Structure formats: C-alpha cells, structure tokens
Image (cartoon, rainbow, N blue to C red; front, side, top):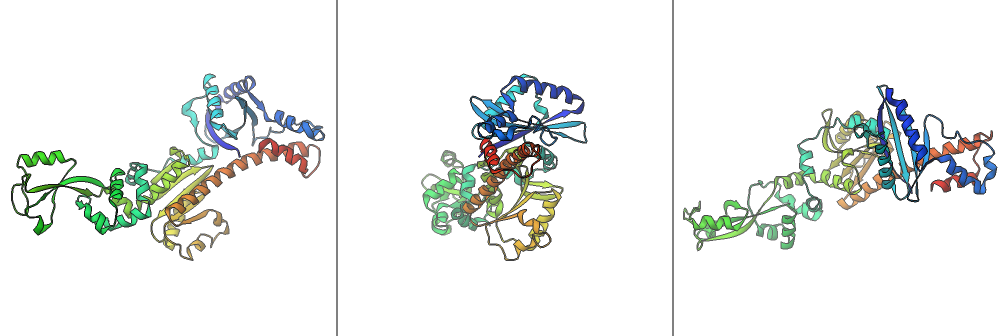
Length: 440
C-alpha cells in the first residue's frame, strides 16, 4: 500500500510566474517524468488498442495541475502538484508524494532539489496538505493550558504505570492524601497490597517519590508517628543528628543516633494526584498518537478554542479530529456540550474515549437529528489496551483512506482521459486492471 505525505508552499501572486518557471526547469532536468509516459509504457505492453488516441493532456485540468513519477536510487514514487488560488495575495502550491517503500527518501531528495535551486523558502513552507493548511488557521488558535504543561512533563514510563488499571485502581485510595504527607512502605504493602518491587517500579517512574524521615524510637511505640521532615538522602539526616539539631515534637527529646532511626517513606507528587483524578486518560491517548508517528505540531492537548476546552485536537490525513476523554460515565449533557464544541471548530471526526460502559441512549443522541452524523462520532469504551487498539485502527483507517482517495482520483482522471476520448462510456475490465497494476 502506498504511503503519502504533503507539504504546501505559499507564493505571492506577483511571484507566481517566476516560481512556476523555475519549477518547470527543475522538473525538466531531474528524474521527474510526466506520469502519462509511464502509463503509456504500462499499457503498450498488452493494451495497444487503447492508445489510438492522444493522451498527452490527460492531467491538464485545474484539479490536478500535474502528476509525475519520481526515480531515486531505482525506487519509484509519484508526485502530484496542485495549485490553489486564494482570496489573499498568495497562491498555495501543494506537493503530494506517494511511495510504497521510501517516502522519506523522496521527500528529502525533492526538498534538497528545491533548496539547491533557490526555489524553497522554509518560512513559506507548511508541512501538510492544502486542506490541513486551511484547517491550521483554526488549529493555531487553540491555546495551551496548565493541564497541557502537566501532560507534556510526563515521561513514557510514568504514563505506562499510571494508565495500568492494576496500579491506578490501588492508587485511587491515595486521592485524599495531601502531596506533602509521608506514607510508610507498610501502607503500600499491607493496605494497598503492592509488592515491594512494584513500589520500587513506581519510584523509578516517579509515580511516587521516595524520601527519608526520622523516627523517634523513644516514643514511637506510643504514637507510631514519623517526624514530618523528609530528606532526599540519608547523609543530610545523619549530619543533623550528629549536630543534635533535631527535637522530637512528641517527647521533646533531642534525637541522637541511639534513640532514632532513619526510615524510607514516600510522598505522592501533585502530577500523580492529577492523573488519579482523570488526567491520565488524556496523557495516555497522547502517548498512543505519538507511537503512531503523529506530528507534534498537528496535536493539541487540553487546549482552549474560543473558551471551549478540548481534551485532544488532532490534524490527521486531511481530517480534524476532536477527542473527548472521560474516566467516568458519560451523560447526555456531556454529549450536547461536546457537539457544540466540535461544531464550532468544524471537526470532521469526534472520538469519545471512556473507561466506562455507555448508556443505551447515548449513541442515539448524535444520530437523532442527522443520520449522517453516524460516521462523525466514534465511541471507544473499555480498558486501556482496548483503547489503544481502537485508536490505532481509527488513525490507520484514515491514513489508508487518504492514500486510496489520492490513487482513485488519479485513476479516474486517467480512465476518463483514455476512454472518453474514444467517445465511449464504461471502462473495460482489462484497462482497469492494467492501470491498477501501475499503482498497486
């Protein structure tokens, strides 16, 4: 299956002629050939009867300015160049690359070709299709929030732990504990039923923090209290004990090495508490998208658009996707509010992600007024592993659909050019297979 990638160049209208002249010169002296030459080559082998008409103008209409084959190190790809006139003082040229194997090689080669010939200004380049370029004008208005910063500060191993139901369900019991409170290891093992190696794993991933505190052995049997003075290392505590600088608040005795113990205790970072409240799901979904090589500049997390909070907003395969993440039950009012937010930003797809089961009437709300909304709204419900599986399928399907649409548009253009010039209708099966063999 072909992969595709696009970029758009903004060119001032008064510089259009010079730009197109330079571009044409580059094409003529490089390994870039009009696609009709390759089509002729394919068809001539078996289907000479379809070439009794001139097909030199097959791809000359305004929707496809030009289409070419690229050859780099014996690999073949396809380049489509579209020109879009805007109401502003610029024209936008869209360069679409398709390749089965070496897409990055073609992009790097063509980019270097434009730079070497002084035709590319990086400031005027937009990494994405023309549709994404237009969508970006709204997308760029999404403002980051404090929650955005929190999620961006999370490491992958932190997200892996906090998104695991086993760990998260047990940590839920710590939601009311102040971030500054010290928790004995016995609480994690005896009350929360963690194993010691699991506690160490949470420490390494910074889900919990390990610190050191002093216990007064004289009165600990009476009060079982730890002196609330956490330290990051034992040496600092030993130094204070040696200086006789610590007094037990319960028995008022100065602590020394004989009457005190240094013990390991734990604190709950504010980041973990925010995740326990539900922020983990947005962070987890972001991580899934990162694994699928979604570009960071096409992804917004916990942003505001016109005073509406959007959990995740993504531009992918010429679609604007809005994600709503809920680690709780979703009600009718949630859907109504989400619909308003999605409509204001003109979302193509709305993906509702929840760990809870949906009520029977929820999915009917979005299709009640418009049966076409059925494809716009997608519900993902279940465990974190199920969420990852479903999100992967959604993104991959969008990418495959874009590839197929690009290829289909070229094939239809070629069909029409070859067959309609003969004054005939319908496309013979043998011609269909011949052209498909070029693309697939």
